[in-house]
Each structure stands twice: as structure tokens, then as C-alpha cells.
Length: 389
Image (cartoon, rainbow, N blue to C red):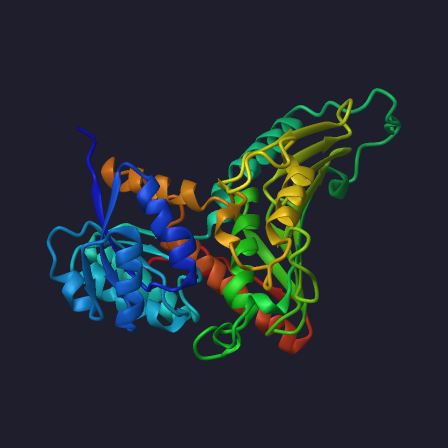
């Protein structure tokens, strides 16, 4: 019989309701046994909705329970460190929402805690586990190793290519509506602003994409609170650019990714479809939604299919965010949970460990400093390769 891990949810807000609890319920190797929140009524509400047996407002109750295998941390950002330290000391594995930490010192303390406790930690920087982005990266790697361009593409034959012609360039375009973010996200003490709260996703994605290269320089512009851009340079000559704005609309999917490489374009439309250009006839690859409340609408799938579902769902609503959680593209949340469960049961590496979590926070902090100084900054190797005892 397959082992079933018992998890305690710490933080029972909207994200937990929309992702964590449903994902636990759908995973046959996970059983959620605790709801913990400083708001007891909210914890009771989630326990009743998802059939969870135990409720508390005190993390100590969870740490004393020998049946709990791992915890899921879904609190405001400033509370991560003490919860993680307590869990590591109690021998509980830790699944933590991004960002792992708000400050570099917090990140080092978390690394020390989990290593001293001998537990695994997974940071839910979920984009690196999206099925559509895995497919896109696989095609990009294959083309990079063995380029196959359109037969009509003109190629210089009387000179060697310049080094920058051999580089790949990653673009993440994120358009969002400020209605996404409550004041807690923008509070410098509890949320840290959107570079800390959101852009860690795409900083981590770029590092995962270009691994084993490491970032060597960063330049950012805009504001540290809301809209901004970030450019990363990597040790092999590749680059990543993140453009984040909050003047957009829920009426169009939030994220688009493009990678250019050796005469080809690899494009992802918000985890819904991949498009491949420059290697023969254009190709389109579609991916199923993680949750679909309207399976009979938009059966063609991809971006067009999602748009049909979206407009059918919001028609007549007073608030377009109503019912949000029953129409979800697959951003990798389920895959990250499954990867971490597998890491615990089979003693494998975490799919997004403490070093990756630290690096995303460090790069976010570096981007904030770049904006405030209005200049590019190096990414020192000693902030990538280090030992924390």
C-alpha cells in the first residue's frame, strides 16, 4: 500500500482555499489533518468545507503531533521564518509559499534550520513545475543542441557567428490588475511589495530555465512596490527580461513567455498553449486546465478556448474574481506538491529547495537595490555558492 503523508495547513486564507486544500484532496498520497490559522473561525470554516478533523490557532499543537509528516506554510511573508524554524526543530518537512524569506538574513537562517533539523523544504515557486513550460524548455534545448531552421532562412557563410548570436533570450511579460493585490502585499514589513511577493516567481523560473548557468548581473527599473522591469545576465551569455505591470486586466491571461534562440521562437501563452516558429511550419501545442468548471465550452483548448470559458463564467457576475478557483490554468502547483511528496517518500531532492528559495529572494533584493541606485549590479558568486552550517 502506498504511503500517505499527513499534512498540516498553516494559514487558511484565499490561496489555501483555492489551491492547497483542493490539491491535498486530489492527491492520493496526502491527507490534510490540521487547519491552523490565527482566525479560528476561518480555520473552522475550511475544516468543515474540506473535511479536516483538527483545528487550532497555535502552531505548537501541530509541532507536538507525531502523526504530521509535513506542514504547508501559507501565511503572510514575515511569519515564515519562525514557523519554519519550529517545524525543522520538530522534524517536520516544510512546504512553503513564496517567497521563502523577505530578507537575505532570514533566508540564511532558514537554510541553517532545515539542515540542522535534517528535514526537506520545498518553496512553491511553482512555474518551474508547469507542464507547458517543461514542454517548451524541452523543445528549446533540443533546438539549441541541433538547430533546424526554415529552409529559406538566410545564414551568413563567410564569417563565424558573433557570440551574442548564439545566446538565448528569455522574456516574461506579466500584465495584471492592481485589484489582485491587497494592502498586505504592499506593506514593506509584511508583504514587501511585488518584487518580493510576485517577481520571485519569474526570477526563479529564469534561473531554472538556464541552469546550470548562474546569474552574474542584474538591472531593474520602475518602482519597487508595483510595476517594474528586471534584466538578468547569465554566466553562459544568455539573458532574461521580466516586464511586470499592474495596469492590466483580468480579461486577458496574466503571463506570456517567449524564448528566442538560433533563428527560432518558443512561445507560451499563460500555460495554455505553446507556439513554435522558425523550425518549419508553425506548430501549436495545447495543455489542459488544472480545473475546468465549463468543460463543454471552448473545447478547442489553448488560449482561444480559455477565453471562451472565461467570458462565459464572468457573464452576469458582479465581480469577475467570483468563481476564480474553478477555472484554473496549470501553473505547476499540483506538480510541485507531487514532486515534494515524492521527494519525502523516496528520499529524493526537493523540486525547489532552500538554495533556490534563497536565490530568488536574493535576486529580488538585488533588483530593489538596482532600482533605488538606478544602476546595474553584479551577482557575486559567494551569494550563489555558499555553506550554511
